[in-house]
Image (cartoon, rainbow, N blue to C red; front, side, top):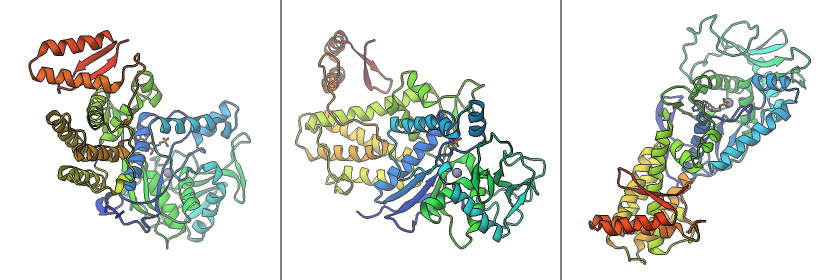
Length: 485
Ligand code: AMP
Ligand code: ZN
């Protein structure tokens, strides 16, 4: 398969740039992962889904990936909580790490090649100190080791922070340690009290600072830098600036990161999520309200990753309706062409023969390749839904048509990205009534209404009601159904 050329908005240059990985058959991607001391909130989840969209888009573009997301299982909050609960750091973080993976599974996030853990990478962190000291960038004070920003001339190049303007008295780093310069950040923390978790290393008893963790895990997994590094926008400064200072400072002859991608924040009802405002949701909170994982996934990925996403339950409902519109079109094509359960093989390389489908296929993949423009890709999906419905309205019985086969192929391909649509014939638990049959009734009712045959339309609605199936018509003219409670 030939490679689709991608462009990405690189945070380092602030511009859209062609994506030129060193080896398209081994694209290296590192994403800052969760700090495992709690359930992930839906903002965190948005940033993890963004990584999944990046992965699935590049795979559709023909690239082979070697991807990692770290697990931050050393952090001051983690250490304080485990002391409070009188458990080890490992015991404390284990259930939260499991919950993180469970959430990803619920949302159909593809597994990555590596999940390095900070606790398993201590030696790699220690190994960074020596070259940093040799290059005059690390100094020791009261047993702690700091990075000297003053001595690193490129500091600020990524986040465009005004280094000279970084004032004394302002806290840039959450660490309460004595440093030479307030702007400096800690690389290694000396153990302060006996109960504080520490590692016995050649630097003495202590633990790493957060920024060093990611630099070291990247080097541990890849031996050098990566093609793409991602994270939420809040990580641009100081975390990523500091990671870059550490890695480039220690190994100036190597390129640390080719492309930096940052995902914008999720807001709830226009505000930053916080527990005190009562607008703080974990994935589980939303599932408990009765929303299904597919609508949540669809909703969280449907906005562009560089736009703020304003989450609300009303918007989630709207996304569900939009998603069902696509799903209904898929069921209609499957039913009309009797194409159930025929998973097409190698649809990545399929050459579409129907011109409209050929175009939509190209538009879809080109939108992804244009800095992961999902809203634009979705416009092609809805155009596909429109032409499919139009075709079926006109040729309901054209079962052998290439159009049906190829539209299903295209839907399969689209679902490689969205991962929320069903292609199997569902035998519902509704006393043997299949979903296919319900959708057929809905279509018959629609046709009856179009023909102004309202008595047939009402009869169909009633018959369904008697079987415990309730219909709802949206203002866009779409009919959805649900089981009566
Ligand atoms: P943490 O578990 O706090 O280390 O964060 C994990 C990821 O979630 C990081 O990439 C953060 O930048 C990202 N993140 C945190 N809050 C939000 C938010 N409200 N919206 C989107 N991403 C977020
Ligand atoms: Zn990181």
